[in-house]
Image (cartoon, rainbow, N blue to C red; front, side):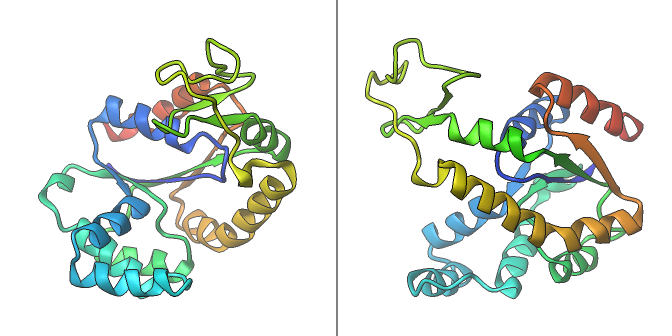
Length: 213
């Protein structure tokens, strides 16, 4: 199965990716991880990307596409993959169709309402030592504002305030509209309500993917 997982910040994309990896034994391909790996390994692509990043510029579409193409040539993806963070533009989506014979099998979009996104992200707290995420309502720490493992005080990310969360959602919806429309016209896009509990979301995803097993 060649899959793409779409969703705005706070949609639960990370949680669903983990459940899908466990259920389907597919590699999870995150363009963010690819980028960091190329930079860390000091590859030609990594050095080129690092130059953009250090100057405060966005890494160009062509470079991100080339990194993704390289990752998709690895033997571990022969039975499929879960792609996360790519494509972000119609140009990237068209490039992906050229990279993959027959294109992707399914794009799943976790469609999530503003109120749910705001509730999830403004309630998020993070351990500065181990990076574990908590939520004041959905997954609180055992002791007030202390990490269960490290026993250090949790903090709220600066971009998890309500105004910033709403702006991030607005930007995502604007940027993703063209790509979602692209896969919708191909008949490869299916929406799943990201407002549901994570277990119910995964049940819906498994129903969608049942025809591929």
